[in-house]
Length: 63
Ligand SMILES: [Zn+2]
Image (cartoon, rainbow, N blue to C red):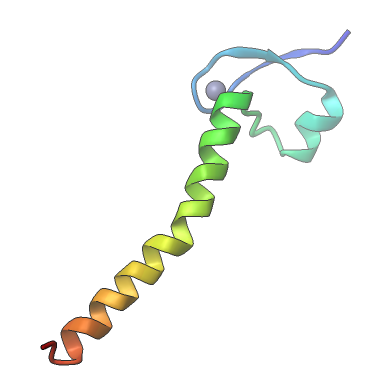
């Protein structure tokens, strides 16, 4: 039987192995929050790329 931990994102109690708990250093996330975190991590490079493009566009003089 696996122990139950509260999700760090939404507080939902989820069943996870102690091995998993140690691997994530206590930052246990339910599948929904883990998916949201992964999506945010994938979006971050796009955000920075857009920010850099905007910066270059402004400093380049435009037109
Ligand atoms: Zn959650």
